[in-house]
Length: 124
Image 1 (cartoon, helix red, strand yellow):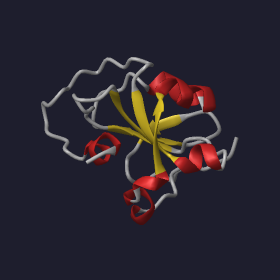
Image 2: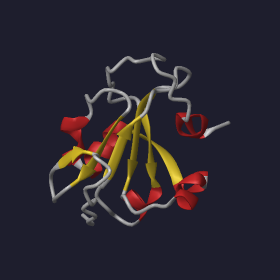
Image 3: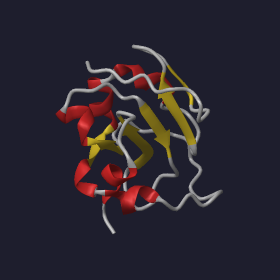
Image 4: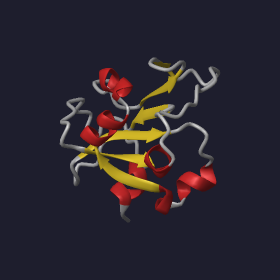
């Protein structure tokens, strides 16, 4: 299926609920983050794939629509170290449990996504 099995859409409760994050593990991120030099605006931790060195983390600018994210050419697998080097603001949230999402609210801070708060989108 590829690209961590299409972003590991199977969120089976209880499946691989290991919350340990190794910074050598991979993650999936929107190419807009690096290609257009945006800070991360939205991040979520899905259940990692057991077959890959997958942290479960998915990173987005925050304005990508479903059409954009469903095209796997718009997404790329990165090491978590690369994400942290690009946007160190995310590091303190990486120990969050699976099935958690955060949105950026200012230049350096995230909060849990409540579905109501607007994402603060900014370039580096």
